[in-house]
Image 1 (tube, rainbow, N blue to C red):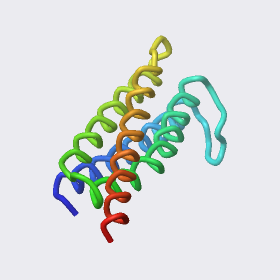
Image 2 (image 1 turned 120 degrees about the horizontal axis):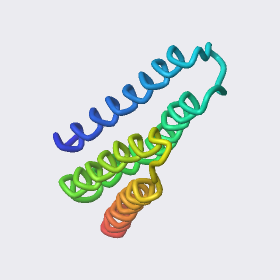
Image 3 (image 1 turned 180 degrees about the vertical axis):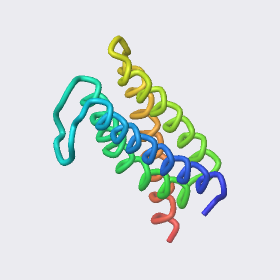
Length: 130
């Protein structure tokens, strides 16, 4: 694995751990005992941030790895960095009651799409030349 792709992967794990910590902190602050997933708005925002980030990471990581394996790893890492920055922006926007998370969501989705296109392009060339 390319070192930059590995770095993006590890940073993604740290982002997931951070969102997990946000939920734990919100549970304590708002008195929401596990396994409850509903509570005051502050808790529900933290919970949705975690779930949405996990859902996005589920698509992002395989796309990142496939794009890096069959495309240009440095380009995959750049798209991965864009996804990470967009997700951090998304977390901050979602936790703010007045925040607009739409642009951050769009950017992270575009980064995943770019990785999928890169992976498919590289796979197509690999299969055609095999």
